Length: 487
Ligand code: UD1
Ligand code: CA
Image 1 (cartoon, helix red, strand yellow):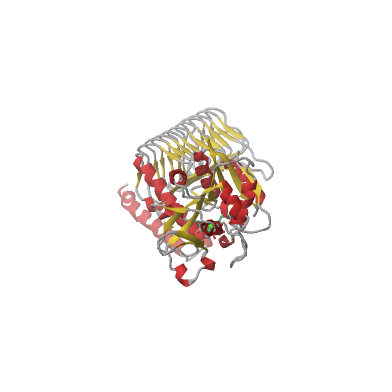
Image 2 (cartoon, rainbow, N blue to C red):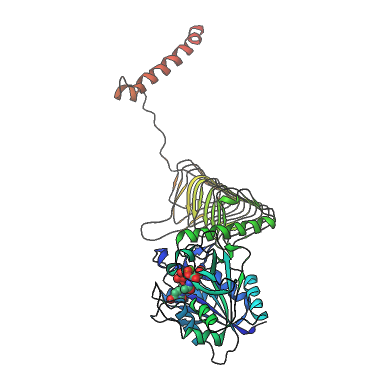
């Protein structure tokens, strides 16, 4: 049910300078979802009356992603005055004038925070008479974070940013997580009084805490049990640390759901992928995007699947596949490359050093070795010989190859598209198939072999090849000699 007394402000206007990236910080991904997407998903679980996202840096790109993940978010543009305080001030102005509840502020760059922790924070705020309640954490290395400064009797007094802190303040380990609940009126009043007199020349939201205390209001802190919940992402080292933590949680979640993950340290599973019971994931495997893997399938080692569908009991070994469907009981790899729109039906095989693209390989059909199969349709029960290449591109247009059912093509064939090989047809080794092959025919177009006897001795006299040839010839000669005598 919608909480009519709750508004959420999502801070997403910062530049993210420390990422040193042309991609806005909040669009960097962990587990296949942009940082801001994680925060918006968590915000969505709280079902607030209003959710306001504040944007400025790379505004259009960020807004597009926000609208993707949270279409009903109100978008507020922050002006040129920098700082989290200014961002919140403008977001509050974006709320209806008669809104009279609590404002939860979350940062777009704190992706691991969960809804339960936020619910606990809101409940604590509402249970006390505090004007503001914030999340804090005890960190061994608090570098970069704002520190919670308490009075001698332990009362929360103010927050000092790392850049403004004295040495003794920097030695404090209790950090501000950047997540707060405020009464909307107190927040509005105090924000108006925040200045930009600090090391960064910004309007800090954190200053509201000290101002509230000076005004005699109560401010409370809730310490999170597990500090990783509030880890912020400012640079790429923190990005990978957050990704690592989230991945560990995802892998563990699937393990508890009945998936065998042999090596969690080298297995990466995106948030949107799904795995059934009795799936086995071998080391060095990445399951990305909206990949789904059905019961009993084995994936890996060293495999990357992006937006793929893997059927029951399929085996996918040392493979790179994108936007492909691997059927029930099918076998792929080792060393296969499945490009988008490959569909391998049940019990089919795409084997070693085979590349496929935009192709449908029917039930039980096999492309076992060293082939490129593009823009191709293969029926059922066919075998495509080793080293087959579909010449699908004439330099201007792409054309399709059709291979019927129960076809046997020879090794080292080229199928020059558009071309069709009929049901039950055969092709000889080395055939360049330029014309359709009727059902049941054998196609061969290679020239008959000619052996020019003695060519090596005449043209390469004295070479190792010539000596070896002579040796074999005389061995054959003497082996035949006794018979000849006997005759
Ligand atoms: C902020 C807190 C710090 C806290 C830390 C927790 C302030 C002044 N400091 O520091 O006490 O320990 O988070 O992670 O609040 N943003 C805007 N507009 C701006 C500037 C930033 O919307 O003008 C957004 C950013 O996009 C980001 C969030 O606010 O999502 C935090 O900004 P950031 O610059 O990362 O603050 P920190 O230095 O991490
Ligand atoms: Ca930050």
